[in-house]
Amino acid sequence: MLTHYFTLALKVLWRRKFFTFISLFGISFTLLVLTVVTAMFDNAFGPGTPEPRLNRTLFVDRAVMYGPHSTWTSSAGFKLLDRYARDLPGVERLSIYEDERTVQSFVGGRKIRSALKRTDDEFWRILDFRFVEGGPFGTEDVKQARFVAVINATTRQRFFEGHPAVGRTLEADGQRFRIVGVVEDVSEARGAPFADIWVPYTTAKTDAYKREIIGGWHAMALARDTALMRGIHDEFNSRLLRVELPDPKGYEAIVAPFETKFENFARNMPTGDRKDPESQVVRLIGALVTIGLLFVLIPTVNLVNINISRIMERASEIGVRKAFGAPARTLVGQFLVENILLTLVGALIGFALSVLALRALRQSGIVAYAEFSLNPRVFAWGILLAIGFGFISGVYPAWRMSRLNPVDALKGGVSR
Amino acid sequence: MIQLQRIEKVYRTDRIETVALAEVNLAVAEGEFISIMGPSGCGKSTLLNLMGLLDAPTKGTVQINGSPIATYRDREVAAIRNKEIGFVFQVFHLVSDLSVLDNVQIPLLYRRMSNGERRRLAEVALDRVGLSARIHHFPSQLSGGQQQRVAIARAIVGRPRILLADEPTGNLDSQMGDEIMALLKGLNRHDRTTIVMVTHDQQKADQTGRIVRLFDGRQVN
Image (cartoon, rainbow over all chains, first blue to last red; front, side):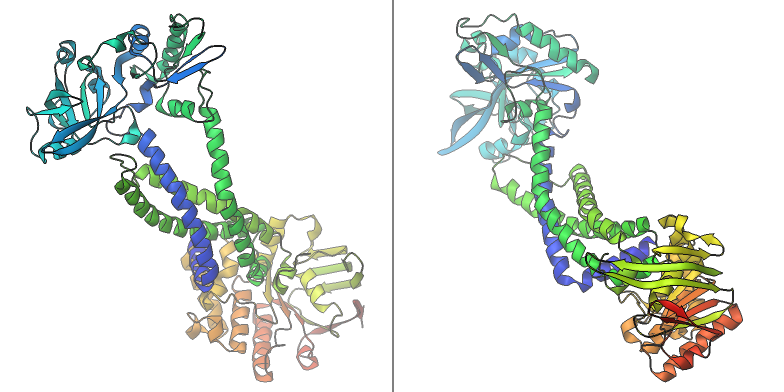
């Protein structure tokens, strides 16, 4: 029976070329946008190199200090993380690292701008970078404040024209570092792991950072088990209640929760309440779902209208099928299959356009080293969205059609 | 086989009430071939639609094989139409996007059977109406008489016991009309298919076993 439906659907679509073109345009454009957004989200929040254990990794990315008259929002301070985030129960590893900053270097009269990140040695144990040369710097390198660096492949290309870099030196931010490792590029969208050059945090030019409660630093904790993540979050929040604030008259409290990457993202969105230490994800998802629904509403209504006229044109066929024993439910099924087939064809066109759009986005350099691509996960989401879209836009017309009186349908579809 | 008791069918709009049928009583026995005659608008097609369970009466009862249909749900009525009744329409109502073979298979799509079996039965039905050579043609490639033969093949493919034909020769010239009548008579005689045919043509009606006449929605003798 499905073969029959498919054959008929293809013939009807081919016969009504203009309707088909309009439908496919709406579907493929909608899915193009949804797929590109999904690919960007996947690149930022999906597990992948160098974050294979993202499901049990927590971050402190944002700190808010607030009082009756003022609020100070920044990243956390080194002192806050060093004093209160260490030895949290349930944490397997903890890394503290600085915001990446843009630094300049001059090579052969060329100015090279790079993103430099100061980290500790645990950074390399939590994250799983692919080294193409050498390896990470270690505990002693950090303790001794050795001027060593790990660079990414693009930096090796820029500084050494792709030649082996380990053992050679480069100058960045007015300091000279000996290269100990080269890693594959990591997308800027991934946040924490991203940089061009990583150096021990102890090589900072001053040690003023050691006294700061707020500003410039992040923590990344690898939980022993996902079940322990809530406890880590709660314990750190309770420790923060004991923090000695730099200006007790101006500020009453500091909020800097350990959260998943997506929770951190939600906190930084306009929907997030930064003073609330609890997760802001529900609000963000609510907003995203609302925006998503509004976005698909217009093409859906369009497709519903096109489907109604497409189906009503086939009133005589509906009448015949009813006369020969097709139950209403079976007819609904037939037209849903046809519509889902149409949306899947639209999805394939949308996917092809997405590949081009994602390539253009990658090449634009808006997000450094972006790996926006149609991986199996994004593809699966796209197919799911297409089927959902096809189902929603097909249900109402199919239901209306199934309620047609067979006699009226045979006369051409005047409903009684 | 088919029993209609005190049937009334009224079409209502906001302003007008039209009585299409009133006080119609009719029993059709198994193996009968009857024709329904009357002027245009007298309710012939309405009566046929009620017999075929395509519509419900405003009053009265329709029974097929002794079972009152009013109590049945959509799925059950659809199953009776599928298994017991075949339809032939004046304007053929073939699906233009489907081949002859696919058109004939339509009633079998709503039965549990393999694609191969469905195809085999459709080929047998097309052979009976003399269209074996045309199974891959599309309706637009056939003459009116051939299209009506396809419609008859579609109506008999599921071996229904009742065939309802609404002016099956109305759109055909006299030679093709005679061929279609010969086919219907053959089905009635050899398969004992019960046939109810609406017609304007006295000559065709005379070839059937009994004539039921309607005038202004009422049965006349």
